[in-house]
Image 1 (cartoon, helix red, strand yellow):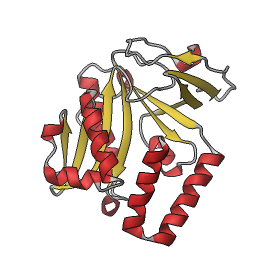
Image 2 (cartoon, helix red, strand yellow):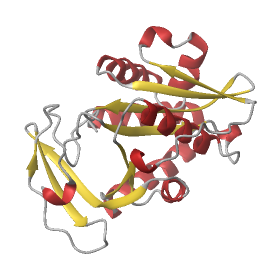
Image 3 (cartoon, rainbow, N blue to C red):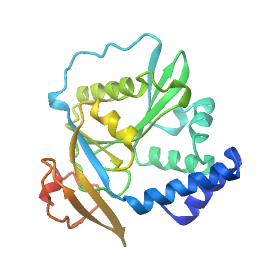
Image 4 (cartoon, helix red, strand yellow):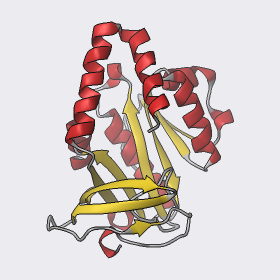
Length: 239
């Protein structure tokens, strides 16, 4: 992330929470950056998932948005106010422009959470190229007052069911090694751990190092991977 974006996010946090809360937040961010840059990568093989519709509580409703114009002003404000409104607004427009889908879950008609998916490629340089029937799941979030109600579980289950019906093959997601809450969530889903990796991009080329394979064994160091949208069915340990 660019330094200017980090400063902008920190400034927005300061306006909401004050000086001392911002200092603590900055300290946490620095510790996370210094202690771990590794990401745990997960995948879900949709061919192995049940085809029966999910038994979702009647109080929960799902919405699928494929364009910026479908997002209501109220939901838009709720989403961008989660972090930095200016950066969030720009991010939402960019994601829709790249073909990403926004999935909303509502409880009693109130926004409870959301997640994004993108099929055939990734929203940013990734650890390997996705196939044309592969999907990236990213940036899921549950509104604080709705946490503890399995909101995210129902949303992701709904997403997986719909993607399977549409012929998608696999879904990939990743989470920072320090993020225990998200790691715990993935363990309660059909996703399986693929490996532990770190990556960085230099002049448009992404270098990936796989620390562990899906079997827990030491994986060889990754090489250069391209991000050009090619429908390559590459697997991480084949890089």
